[in-house]
Amino acid sequence: MDRYLITTSYYIYADNDKKAKSLAGYISDKQRKMYDNRCEVTELRRCDFGRLPADTNLAEGEHLWLTDLWI
Image (tube, rainbow, N blue to C red):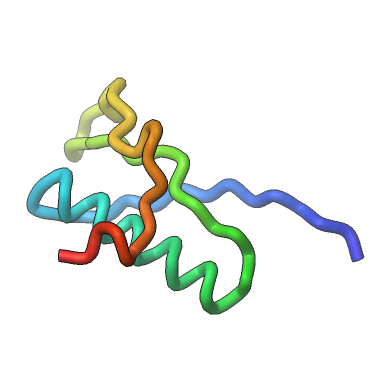
């Protein structure tokens, strides 16, 4: 069986950066547990409605694991 890499994007809504990181960690954790697919968050950027994404990657240099970020 061949192995493939899939890249996806989601828009999520959160009250602040910390909660956005927590939700991103939750989503990737569910993917890893359900499909054993080594899912990880590589980018998390603020993207206000009607605007381009911010230049700052909130996930840079971090591993957003659910157990580390749960609020």
